[in-house]
Length: 170
Image (cartoon, rainbow, N blue to C red; front, side, top):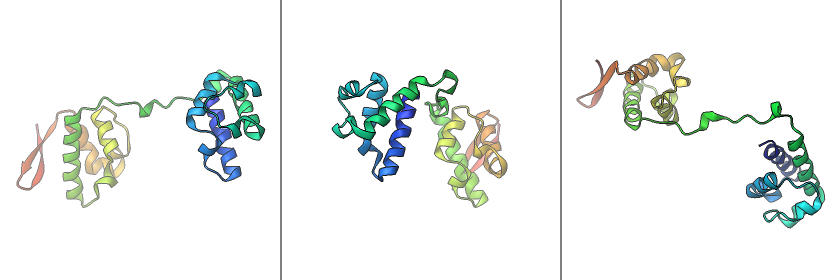
């Protein structure tokens, strides 16, 4: 990961300097290959199957070799941290659907757009057990979050009442 980080930083800086798309310097697949093979010199770099010919010489090649060396020299405490927050959540789909119905009812009652209160991703996170996020803080918590948590805890239910939805104490 340290080598990938260094290669990505070099590619981004070089692309900005030349005012070209970053994939014109080298593609993501080539970056992964370079991080895996860890070329130490021009001869090693020439063996890359995915690297374009222009990147095997000149300032791009020098930058690649410097980035690989910098990544290898990085101290373990400076390694890139992996963001686990984007890992696949174990979402309860039925609960997620109920939260969407509750959000729609609460947003209509408050006269506020749904997306200002909570996004689909936040609803899925709540259904997966995450109890953090904008929809569970501040005014959003007052309008929606408190009842969303109560719904998740089985303290309230939802009932169709004519053309609207009502919250029912359990």
